[in-house]
Length: 236
Image 1 (cartoon, rainbow, N blue to C red):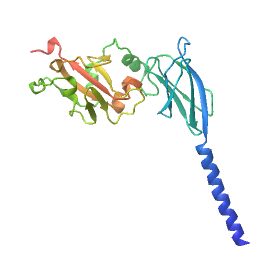
Image 2 (cartoon, one colour):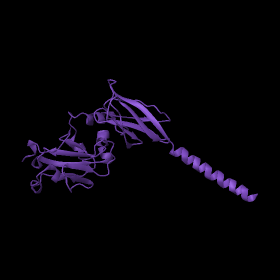
Image 3 (cartoon, rainbow, N blue to C red):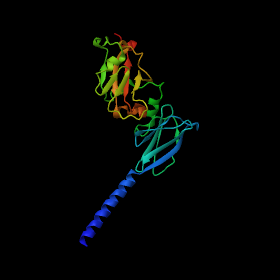
Image 4 (tube, rainbow, N blue to C red):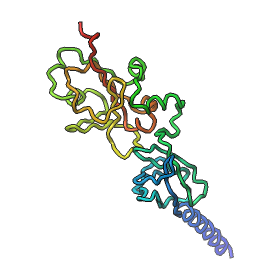
């Protein structure tokens, strides 16, 4: 009788643990539609679950479908041209998004700072950028004038920065972007490429990552490379 009682207890413990494990591993399907501020469908938006990128993207009509663990907390959609938006799941299986073009999601920065970084036509304060905590190298010394490309100047001079050909990756950054390339800021203006920058025109280069890059919102999640070129007033 005593043996049967012990066996029953063991069975109940294991069956309860197995049931809990099943519930934790259960997956649910979330569907929805992603549109822009004009209510037009956004195609190719990437789906993230709890800040982790999935392989799911929206179709041409803006619809998506993604399977997630039942204990998933947040779902985020990101479009390179329409920004990002994040929602708490809270057991919902249908979640629609409207992307307003704002790339920042829960960065902890004020709206004015995000708007300034978002506008490629605005200039940022060079002194503020150079005191964010990243390593700044002054390239006006004559020893740097022999470099052939801007990538040669960056390669091997900044901790955690890998340069392969014309590809740059800032290690330790938590990417939320489709691309792994960092954000480039030249003379306070966000640019798509630094290929055409001559080493002889570079004054300083700074690499920002982690909290130091959050002023640029989700666009800075791959790290930020800040380049300041020589101005006429710098020539003595």
